[in-house]
Length: 110
Image (cartoon, rainbow, N blue to C red):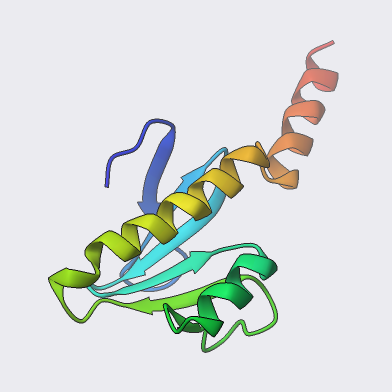
């Protein structure tokens, strides 16, 4: 995926690809068919209720969902959920650690 402002990096887990905006991960991909998508808790509840995704196996309390691509017919839905996650992450600007690090750098340079 190539979206403006989105950085693709190797994630924290073996073989994982992480998509980030402003230093904040909104999606990571395991292999070719497992997407873990970060949504708000409200959107997550709606997506789970409609059966569009499944509960993330290791992070059930947050907004992360698991989306398993089983056919090409699911690509549009996966893309739609990914764009929702990107929009939410982009609206939050940068993750707190990144913003704090920038403040410290500015203070040191004065």
